[in-house]
Image (cartoon, rainbow, N blue to C red; front, top):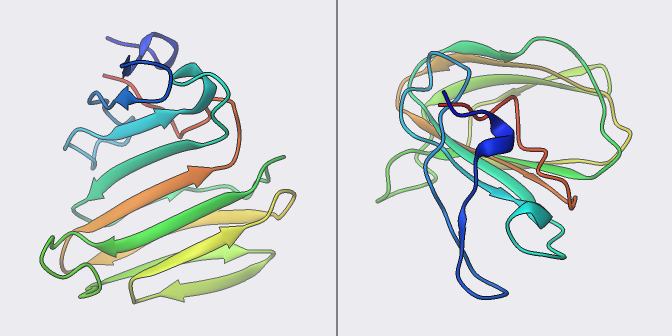
Length: 146
């Protein structure tokens, strides 16, 4: 089993990193994920990112929390021919307010904002989920493991 700390994309020069597959702790997510690990991949990079394919409903993150960095969440259709043809229902709590997402979207979560639970309630068609964070740390979660 590969731990998060052992995962490493392959660096090609100072500014390019080749993405390698990783696996989610969530049993529902069976397709390999990809992640950009900030400064762990490319020295000085201020972005950590994870991308996964969500095929069915599950509770992704059950508890509210906050970060000391800005975060951006993307939910788009898994259909590569039409990223906005969205057929899912996702509940995300932001600052105590439950939001129901039924459309392709991106969400800004400013540093310090309490957010979650994040519940993928219904999936008619698979969803691509992208979690991007403005941080030098490789803080893509809830945990890449394989």
